[in-house]
Length: 363
View 1 (tube, one colour):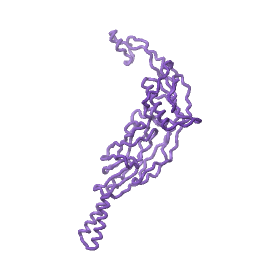
View 2 (tube, rainbow, N blue to C red):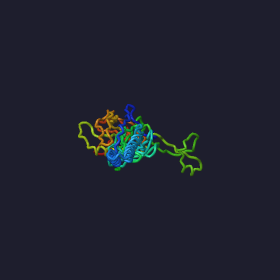
View 3 (cartoon, rainbow, N blue to C red):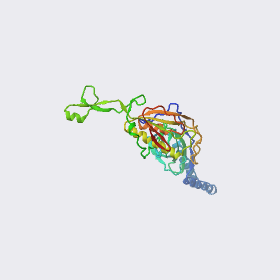
View 4 (cartoon, one colour):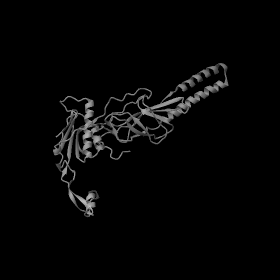
């Protein structure tokens, strides 16, 4: 389910496919003890030919087999469905909801290979929320999960590794910097409307009596109270605050910036753009973009062993992205995949801001 106002992804972006490893079943310590007792009872039965020992052996074997089958059946269904419950921000864990297609009995879910993290118990077939570690800025195409379930009497444990794919790849945008990026030159704020500044801040000129067809939002309440009749603002829509933000994270021919300074620069860019949007400015964001496709499918391996994500990368859709952004969702989407490389900014008639790993400059 896509959230209202969620960032859009390029149509050429490929989709990941759900995957599921086979269900592995292991005996717990109690199950191993039951097997040992059954073996000893069998040896004693061969010596004394006791009906009671034969019954004990059969009962223990039956209990282990049934317990293993129940644990296996709990995880043998289709791959669960997952969706992110909120817009993700780099540096914070992502909360996901998981919904099983066929719920049989409770099972636990955690990030694949994460032996230390706390598992979330799924006790019903409806949506269950759980957190996964911060994946870093970018696009999340899928999540690798380890599912585990115990048999009804706890003699056996089943585990299965799956690759769950959300309906739409999730965007992990940067966290806006907490540091103020500085102020633009005052003389550069009011700019005439043009093709690159399609919307403007209407400039207040005066008030006049209400006329049929005037918008309610233009009613000037103080003037209305003073004149005793409805008065509206008369405005000139001839000026705008038009800002171009160029995010230059390092171009060819220059020393590569450290990953920390790059992420700090992206956070500063997010702060500049969001501050400008809150003031009603028209903002054009220019970035060098590298949107990755999901990597090729890999063998998930046994959930009882350590997990190493594949080092293979998917193809990358790369190029400059130049667009007027109208909300924080669009800002997060564009900055989520901003990368190093040469950035060519188009001509712009308004105020300009350039964000680099070295800081913010206005012109």
